[in-house]
Length: 102
Image 1 (spheres, rainbow, N blue to C red):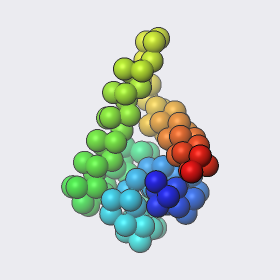
Image 2: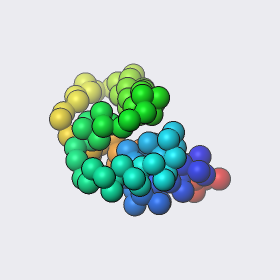
Image 3: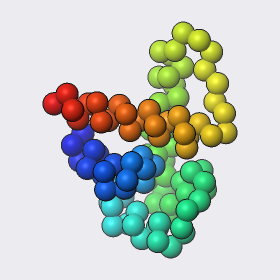
Image 4: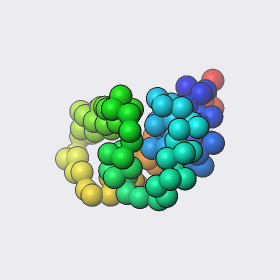
């Protein structure tokens, strides 16, 4: 958890880059960001040249959505900005709280 928290700090709170760096290494993510610039979340994921890293990020997002649906009493809606806004904000908050409680 500490390593992931450090990655989130390194990538200025960008959970997508942090998850990619957790799996593929921060230097690779630095290279990709430099090569591709800013792009929508889904495009960034699909541009990742490592199938394992692409699948890892998709699995984390899919599991988050599943657990969110299971734990939420009201209907869970997935809008087009979900990955960029809600997911990344919630993950960042959750990871920060987990780090602070240790």
